[in-house]
Each structure stands twice: as C-alpha cells, then as structure tokens.
Length: 461
Image (cartoon, rainbow, N blue to C red; front, side, top):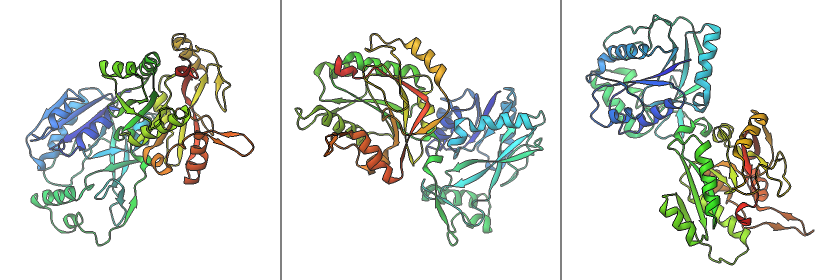
C-alpha cells in the first residue's frame, strides 16, 4: 500500500511548523508532495530535505484551491493508494504517527471507506492547552483520502471553500487527533487575524480568532504528542572500557532508527584518560562527570552519575541503558509506544547467566563478554519470543521515562538502603516504588522491546 503526504506551504519555515510537519509525515508516508507558494523564507530548502516532488506557485492565497489541484495532480502521478493532507501547522497525534494512519488506510480498503475525518485540537497561545469553547472543538475535516480514480478539487477563488477533493463518497470519523499549532503563540494569533482581515474576512468569522470572552481551555495530554516532536536522550555510563563503549554504541546504531531527535550520550563517570581520548578522537557524544569524592563506594558514584545524566539531558524523554547491553530490531519504537505520563517502561532482558535474572528476565548465554557475544543467535532468539504485550513490574534497566517526571521524583537515591533486618533495598527499587509510584507512575515491562545483558561487563573487564 502506497501512502503519499500532501502539503501546501507559504513561509512556514521560520515558524518551525514546516520542519515539524514534514518530519512527522516522513515517519509513516512512502512519499510526500509539496507545493511552495513562493515563500520568502527557507521553506523550500526545508522541503527539499524530505521530498523531490515539489512544485512552486505564485503567492496567491485566494487561488489556493487551484494550487491544491496542481499538487493533487502531482500526487496522483505517483500512483498512491491513499493521500494524507496536512497544513504545515498541523500534525496527527502519537497514535496516528505510530501506524494509526496506515491502519486506517487498511481499514478503509477492507470496508469500502473513501476518506477519514479528524477532529482539530487547537493549541492556544502555548503547547500545553487547547480551546474547547463554542466551535473550537467541533471542526472535523477529511484529511485522509483514498485514490478513488475520480479525485478533483472544486476550484473556486476566495476563503474557506471545501479543502478536500470531490470523488470521496463514504467518510468515517476517527479518534486520531489533529494537533493544530496555528494559534499556539500570541504572535501567531495576531498574524492569523491580520492575514484574514487583509483578505477581506469580517464579522464573527474574523473576530473569533482574537475573542476570548467565552474562552475555555483544557490541558492537552502529553502522551498525545507524536514521538517525532520530542527529543529522546539515551544515556549510558562508562568509566574505563573502550571495548564496551564501542560494543554498546555499535549495537545501538545498528538496531535503532536514528532519527535526528534521538541522541545517544555517554556519561563519562570518573573516566580514564584513555576513554576520554577515544571519545574525542572519534567525535563520540559524552558528558563528563567527576564525583566530589572519587573514593566513595562505587555504587553511590554510579547513582550520582545516573542522576547527572538524567537531570542534564536535553531530551523530553530519557532512557537509561548499561554499557554491557545489546539491542534488537525495533527495541526503541516498541518501548516508547508504551510510554505514558503514568508509566516508567522497561525493556525485557535476556541475561547471560553470570548472575541470576529477575522478574520477566530470561537466562540464555549469548556471550559473557563483548568479544564472545553472538549477535546473530541473539536476534534469532528475539524473533521467537517477541510479543506485543506489557506486564506490570519487572527489572529496572533499560528504562524510559519523561524527563520532567524523573526530575520531580528527585532521581535515584545515592546508594542502596540497608534495612534493620540486614536486607538490602536497591536504589532503583526505591526510585520505582517509593518515589515514582506515589506520583502515580507505575512500572511496566515491554515484551517486544528486547535487550541482551552481559551482566557486570565493564566491572569484569
């Protein structure tokens, strides 16, 4: 099935809208067609990063349907099964990006549906809230069109005509949201008002853009923003082993879809000069952490370094991994599709057997050092046990959490806790069950995000 994205643009490069929209569409579309209405900013150069199917038209806003017809003809020349249309200041929600739009296409094929309509969620003067008053939460638009063989725009000049083609007979509404950034800042609200006023719009249709007399806002759920709009920081501690540093980074690069919003960063924790020299010579991203007391018990220094990495990360989402871990195909996508504000999610571990495994862990020896690791056998094993399922509880690493939740929790305690009876409560258990759980954040293991763990790799090296 071939799905083609459809975007018409004027001067949305400088706002950041166009890059966000095209990056989003590129996650699930097979190709994208783009019409630039003679933008004076860098819109065209941004579009060229995502598609070669571009037309340039004059800046004639009242002729936008004529431009869309030309763009539709370009899209149809690619022989798509479906076309998905977004304005540059629009994206679908996380469900839509994570195969939701493609699943709608499949459903439409099976049930003879020609188009799907989506409800607009208009972010209001920030990216945290959306308007719910009057008609602000009643705008449904067909944005996903089947190539019925008779698609054609009803070309008229002027504002607010039908923005989807003729030839679509059976439409179905969907619960996938459209996130609209057109009113997401005060500046954009004022600009939209001025633009429509200059084009002759008057009365309520114009004044509603600024009118806040009936304003009602609701918080937009963080979990609805697609992953392409979020920065993801993968954080890994290292202190002496070049072999394990290369091992984990090479495996990460091999089995991770490296979008530009995903960054792998080593935390060089009281490192050797050899490690730092290796990172610098090979342009490997790292942050240096020096403990105030380098002779402190090693586990305390480890937890301090984890907290440094989490608190100083650039990501909206942080993922902690160990240097003696190897990854499998789609581990990141499968982990993050299960992340919610009320969850900290962990990968399922296959462990070498050096140490006994824990809840949901599997003991299977694919190598007890990085040089012994049998990647081919491990990947084959992953294919036999992977299943789309999550269960509460499990082991503690690798884990993914929203950064702001990690920061609010205060991070890891500095070391394990020795109880009165002599038992030891690990610091990661304290974080998960004494800090995060009272915040309403539960621990889940994801059964199709599978990681191999050598166990005590750098310690034994």
